[in-house]
Image (cartoon, rainbow, N blue to C red; front, side, top):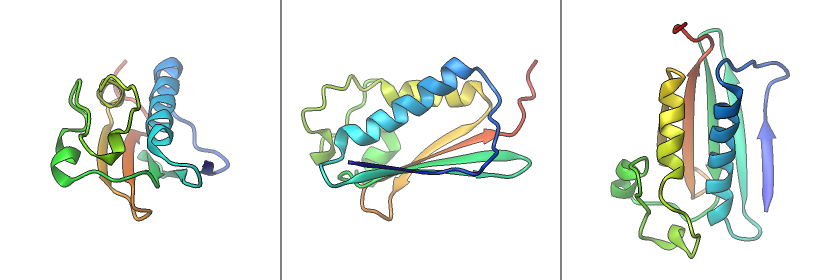
Length: 130
């Protein structure tokens, strides 16, 4: 397995460091859990003055459009080759969505150009809540 990081020299993230670590760990583990030997995960961060955009793009088997619409629901597990004996509970991506929304951001899933799944997280450059 290959993990490739494409990060700028400086791109501070604002928020709860424990929850952000949980978010990134969950997203990386989710991708790598379904990726076969020889595949990989690329994490890319794009930053501007308004937001941080983080893409998690894997080479694991993809999911259907219908599954993509449900992927952030609690206890949802895709019924496809992506769901090979992984032992997941179906809570990881729902937890990720809760963390992102608590940080005033958004999370979405799409098809990856690499043939797998691409999860995109948008986080504001600054939080507005005190």
